[in-house]
Length: 161
Image (cartoon, rainbow, N blue to C red; front, side, top):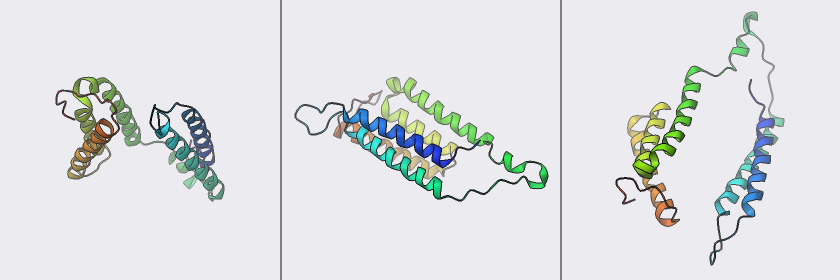
């Protein structure tokens, strides 16, 4: 079964609004104009706006009535997830579990790099592109969160990032 864009958009808009509402109530840090709710507020507002756009587009979209080809029910089969899609979904969940389990030992940099390479290959990105994106994204995230925003990231064995 495929969910209608109006349903997904409505749920996203309501969830984003609730997320933003909670985030706006988080306290600011002493002496700083922003606090713990700054980024969650941005995410909540963006999620609400995206949900509203999807909800409105759902009403404007023309929906063809699926007709079975040759009476066999081929149109209904087109809605079922493929084995490859299910595999990629499971790999993403496994990547999250891997990060939770491995980051305290391997650190942020190694864990993130491994996850990005595996996901890039599973989603069939070119190997060179995957490696470049994994290196650049890992370093940018480590520098942004670990140094600029001072978020404590697990150091792991290399510890310098």
